[in-house]
Image 1 (cartoon, rainbow over the protein chains, first blue to last red):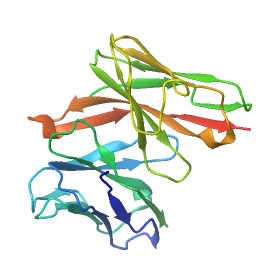
Image 2 (cartoon, helix red, strand yellow):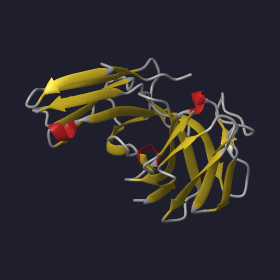
Image 3 (cartoon, rainbow over the protein chains, first blue to last red):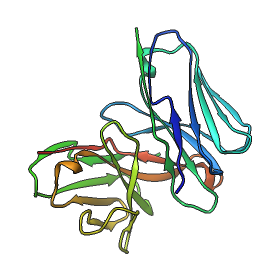
Length: 111
Length: 119
């Protein structure tokens, strides 16, 4: 069974602070995705990373895929209240069709 | 992209009853996925709904408890049968799409979910 452990589980910060969310596994993934889910909605894709060591930036969000393709991180610079939500990483293994979702990180950004 | 309509958006049900959740997609898709998200938790895949064949269930989920229909390429239903309070969850319908070249770039589009509470 492939597991994706996210840390921290919960994070409560003030607007303007920086934060990093981690997604770790003992398994190798061919690609890894990050989704954000707001209350009452389904998850929405933020980014897909496919190459070991890859770094992608989406405005104030920076995503990195580990060199060994077993882990990933999401860094948010100068967090805003609109960043509040549940962040989920999801990995796709070589040879498998379905995504495995991480345990989730719930972020609350207060004004 | 795909637009997914899911209903009902929420329901409160009595123990022992059943609820059928509907999922309508605005385009034809080969596979539709049903996920469960328990309170404060991540997503767990229940089954993959294939058009023209029986659904494929994940470990821990059985057809008698979660029967699925897939009558055409744009519609699916999930029934939660003989409900108990432990079935209280958000149930999400999802379809796959490709955002770039290659299988690895496949992404999931989700409906807004059905919040189920069982008393």
